[in-house]
Image 1 (tube, rainbow, N blue to C red):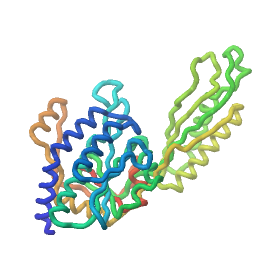
Image 2 (cartoon, rainbow, N blue to C red):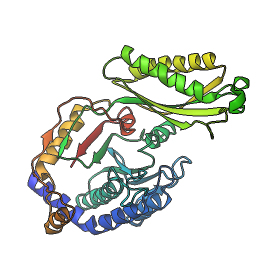
Image 3 (tube, helix red, strand yellow):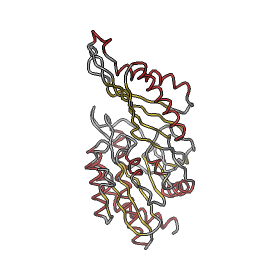
Length: 361
């Protein structure tokens, strides 16, 4: 199909679903549901795709807010990744949940794109299968990890994902590998006036964090170690019997993260020994670095160049003026630097199961 004809067909298909996509995006933005609690958001997207003729498995593999919607037969099977979880303290008012990373768009736009692709295949008699994966809990880097563990994405020949960005383009490098762990310390409570009779779990957690700070000097420069104490006791004059500290370890690849995680866990064991407490730890989730696909990168880049970046309309510019912002927009697209990003995403796990084309607009 010639580029001009392809562009016209795609634009016509997308225009047909644009109104419904905007409506879904506004609804998901308003619900702003936390990870694994996106009941309304997942339900609305699944219902929309079912209305448009897709076969829907909801929930997917017993994950309550995950689903898979498929249409068509044979090969190739092309996946589209949708997300819809929100973040705390990112809403319009202080303390509210909101879509800091635009996940209301990440759910609605691929769903509308899947329907538009279906319409085009029906018109042209094209073969293949379109598979939309509704993916919860991206912000906690867990949804696609659990879906992949339970058999998701293995039916795909290729997969597409996107994200809002400051420019339009493709970067094949992806993000960093990451592990998320919780370390719990168990001590013995006592009154502060008789603290010698207790064993402070908080001391264990704090001492672990001190050791982690010393560890930072002895890991590769690209490694990042993040932590936050989730539970440290109830009152200063009561020795805490329980404490919990949550860590992220990021690195360039899975091997590097595994090595640093083992050293960090050794810090936890040493802290427990030094404070007379017991320690247990659990890995909550882990994501891989991306497995690059040059062919998917080239295909995605070619289509971005064909269609160009989005352009604001009058209402968009008026809205920018209302909030005191100036926007510069270019229809051009940029090829990524090839440098690995500092952030992490569970979508990179999918790249090890199917070639992934990821772009931003």
